[in-house]
Image 1: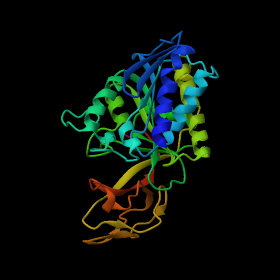
Image 2: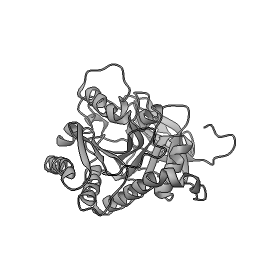
Image 3: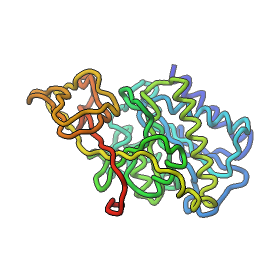
Length: 323
């Protein structure tokens, strides 16, 4: 049961101080590990790296990724000289195997109102994110994805961060607009507070061991980059950048919206393709591109989503790109 895995991981994190470094509990399922000797060079925030998981409660893969990182710390197979926060975000939704309880947690960071479970949890997590220099938020897609991918609001620091983690993983980015009209995602919140935040979608939701292993490898590369950040920042320009996509069209929910079977993340579509239907008629792709975040079984949603999918297109950076 996922509740057992979750509480076992909690115990493992809390025991880290017995092995090396110290562990500080900030709030329930939220901790900061401090090494005995900490690298303070060029870090303007006390938490050098935050690893966040289960921001959506039914995306459980991140639990197993963090579990492995904690095991490596415990056994001293890795000995980072940076502080690392572990945030198991919507743990109450995870116990219920739900995306969220009342509101999508990844849409309420920075919100000034709201008294739901997720609004209250966001405030607890923000106490860590406010102090975070680098954030890696570990997610999974609802439907099948042909590849892992990074998602974040466009900025050069985040691009440099992800190409040093893994430059073979595509990036989906957006510019002036927000990722969601509902509120801030975790990475947006960190960016607005002067840090560098990115989300990684490691696989379709679940605990497939192959994808978990690959995600652990990417997290280890992330840790190494943050460790070396103050020393090697100028040496990363020679690395080829990631393949870059931009959210170019959003298909919003209408009454009776239903996508055709078989749409998955990064599935190629052409302008004019019929993607599904609604009470207002067929849902038609307006542009060429690739499907992202398709949503099915909308009758099961506690709150109907604002959008049922996005269409992304590959882009190239040039001197006219907004930064």
